[in-house]
Amino acid sequence: MNYRMNKQVSITVIRRIPKYYRHLTELLEKGVNRISSQELSNLIGFTASQIRQDLNNFGGFGQQGYGYNVEELRDELGKILGLDREYNAVISGAGNLGHAISNYKGFKEAGFNIVGVFDKDPENPRHSNIEKLDVKPIEELESFIKKHNVEIGIITISKKYAQEIADIYVKAGIKGIWNFAPVDLKLPKNVKLEDVRLSESLYTLTYFIQETVE
Amino acid sequence: MNYRMNKQVSITVIRRIPKYYRHLTELLEKGVNRISSQELSNLIGFTASQIRQDLNNFGGFGQQGYGYNVEELRDELGKILGLDREYNAVISGAGNLGHAISNYKGFKEAGFNIVGVFDKDPENPRHSNIEKLDVKPIEELESFIKKHNVEIGIITISKKYAQEIADIYVKAGIKGIWNFAPVDLKLPKNVKLEDVRLSESLYTLTYFIQETVE
DNA sequence: TAGATTGTTAATCGATTAACAATC
DNA sequence: TAGATTGTTAATCGATTAACAATC
Image (cartoon, rainbow over all chains, first blue to last red; front, side):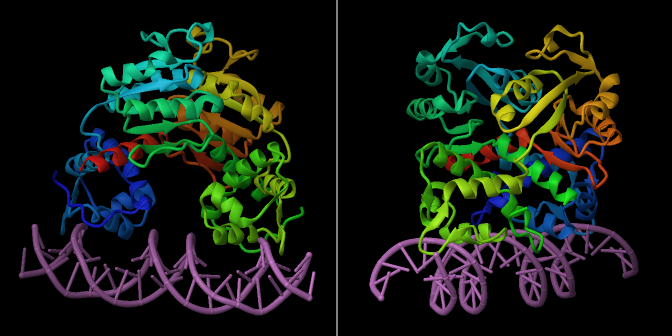
């Protein structure tokens, strides 16, 4: 571990790290190898001061008079986010959303392997095979997770079954759940939860749309 | 307009409103017709104090000694979010994610009508028809928006074409863009933008997964 | 060395929580 | 009326910005 990690870093800061990571990755692809907090600020839109504060939660990645080395900083942030290794993941819910995540190349490239897709009704033709993965019945989920060293459980199944799936994930010893169902899952605190709230995002948009009109 | 609206309400508050809205909708379905800030607190997890502060940004929806009327509060928050009317929306990008959004019943029920789906390559069998909607070529997008009173443009197309689509949306007079592509769209400020950053969400999860291990 | 830019402390700003008077 | 619970002000806490000494 290369970076410093004293006091608990606030969730507000953590949620900005992936944004830095994405921009640094793009800079790297463009062949930029050095950047100052001010230049990053122009790019991302956070203040230079905030950027320096954020990064200093984890250590002094920069160099006075020079700035930051793009590749080094990107790699360090990648390590902080845990992106320096691969993860096996399963999806429960073989609808369109499950398909979308399973087929998305970007996740594979980032080191996320979708090793299994499960559904209540695997024979439904609408849930037909995803790429080269068979859709398996939920009954096999728990043993599959244990056998294949699965750390991440994705929930794209309907709201109705989400907690049931989460319970299986927990029982099988999964480490984190990425949940797309609009329910508040109850989990033991050693299992991490990240919710994607699509409706909430959409409703925020309509709020601002009408704001203009008034 | 029934609710008060003085000073600009902060984005932090706004992003909590859909959460209240969802819980109140569920309470209503369960037949609960009255709730106190303390009971809401137990349900949602925000403090009772914060709930009262949040709601009072928009007006006094409660009654001392009684609490809040569930249906009335839900409806008021719905109005605040602009959910008291329908919206026509189009999707650009007929991949799995486009399909997922287009087929999701919840959006239809909430008043969002997907009136058109567009793609660079509408003949691609993988982009085959979505429910009963033909997938149309991008060339028809601008005129379609103008003709069908479309207010919301959804972007589920690849990163590469996202800005191009956004430009067409803007030119056609769309009011808001719901963007799933991992790019920073450049838009005039009268067009509202809401980004869904799936990767950023996933990377936050891996951060917390490894946190436990260390 | 001189110039640039970080790392970090201090100041400010905003958001959350606590407390309680108002009132149903 | 007495009890409950809001609406709202004041206190606290945390996050952002400003400023500048350290240093490459």
